[in-house]
Length: 364
Image (cartoon, rainbow, N blue to C red):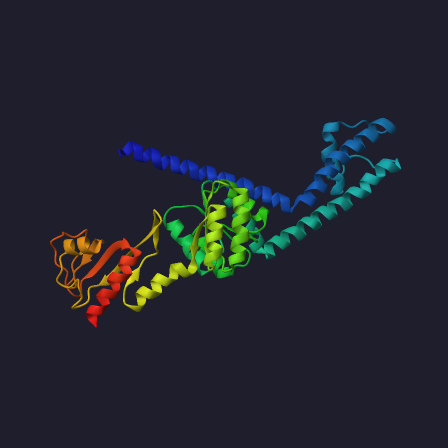
């Protein structure tokens, strides 16, 4: 990549960032105006419509000096602050404006101050409005529903991968909210079973969504609602009930990860000092990767890498000697394994569990 290309990429990223800031500011301004919509509506209605009515009544039904229509908003505003430059009329239908508009001003100022004080005290509400504004600018992002321990880790991993993430949760504590803020992940506070909440999270523009609350039936409801709203997004759902997981996978075209399947290999491996990854499903078969230590006297102690791979139908992808040094990725087939070596191998899941058991027998 040349220097000019790098400059162009950086420039493009800066432009996109500036455009996003402008879009966020626009959406946040709209949200802020929405909070003050009642007093603002009354104010503009009074100076515009009230000015038009006053001009028509004054010029059509009174002997007062004719007024210019363009000046009427100014006169209405002057009536509100008791600083009018024209004389008080004699007509009752015009005097009403002189006494009524100051009351309108009191309402506008009072209601506006009350709304401002409410937003100032309830800062979380303003923070939520800002995060909604941020989420509204996202495209091709990933939605994470359920920000518990698992959901938080998923959001962190996705951000480290460089993905934009929107979190959805109806009940989250301040510490978790602050951690999301540190990750630049906007939170949409609400029940993901509500269509409006998913619309606010921009499900229609998301490439994927992960549903990982602690309740299987909530996960099911959310997944069904998401699939109904977005037929093309990749959906991943966590389930404890394996039977329910298979039904969802079959009928909703959803990737379902059973929580018990995820943790069972980890617990089994930890019991014998090994680390087993999540199963990979390829062509209807399950494969796994495992890290463990060669036990003294096991069938691997003193065997060559090629011999183990050919006889056991596995692939040794990494070897790390007990005496230290850098790990050897895809070690030479002639290297001899020794007790205490750490190896990582990949194979069919059934073969891996068998190999692990035979390795442990060597220690006994």
